[in-house]
Length: 437
Ligand SMILES: [Zn+2]
Ligand SMILES: [Zn+2]
Image 1 (cartoon, protein in one colour):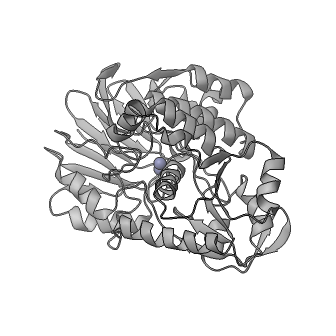
Image 2: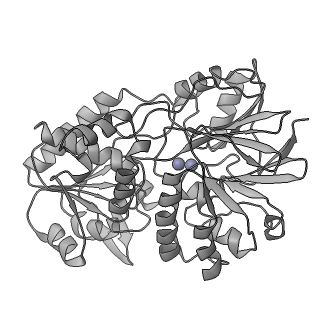
Image 3: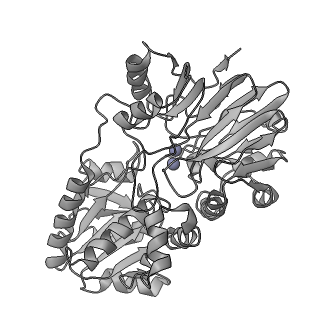
């Protein structure tokens, strides 16, 4: 079995790994790297035609955003993934095509993506030529999977993005009876100092701060990725509003979050058991909470921004690189009674990072806007931290080789140094190829 890294080597973004065994070639993920300048996996278009299949770990664009390009370049095979991932990919890719208008993508290529999915079930084996696969729950976002692949000689496990923490939405990653000689593991938070603080403490501080803003009559704006963090944050807000910890004010949902929320709702069988029970056994459907209000029109958005009413707005994009958040900030950033609350990673070069680092003036839609609103960060991560990653590795029977990907170079190095006594650890560079035989 050969492994080649076309992206996510020493970086977060453009995950794309080629697995080759005999004459079978399969791509694990096919993502893009978002940022000031979009970056793509380093696989040649001519090579894409020779790929037998693509297996997708989950719906985030850094794992699936290259699909429209791949089909435009002449790939004509299937994409294997879970049902929720298929549905979320549709929503996220349409949005991406509208906002980014990527080059080298034809309409036909984009339309082909939709009709080339093969839905697979968690824990059920499926075959692609001589390779046997299994998808296992990864605990990261709805439908996310660890991918197991075997050619009879080697057994490889690819984590995609994963979390070992139980959240309001999802069970943690599946860790029963894991067997693999080779592991490809994400390392977003694999660095020496990457240990998350106690989450309940973090949530309590966040709630106190929200209460303070609401009591002043201010508006709390929470930028979030449409899939994953947004649903967690909304459920946290709803829970504590119901129990009276934070005052009852409208929670407005804007951007793609509403659509993603509906996909979570009708795939609730893929969410954690307690959530399914809550919906099945009572009239109480948290997805349809009376505290939530979907922003359907520009007029409604205008009203929210200009009325003197305390409220909470959860909207896209998570790193303020586009989406309705721009409009909200144009109107709300200049008032010191309002608050901007980040809940996720802000990549270098993004407007989110600039604001987080204390910029007092930002540029939105070509004009300058003063930032007087309070700015705070509460990291509610969907990734495993370092102790979780190490715990996960220790649960894999027969493990020999580890490839560390999907993390800044320094994180990979720090994981390497910790693990090298027990395993053969590699931190691949872009386009590097390894032969396991
Ligand atoms: Zn992800
Ligand atoms: Zn990712």
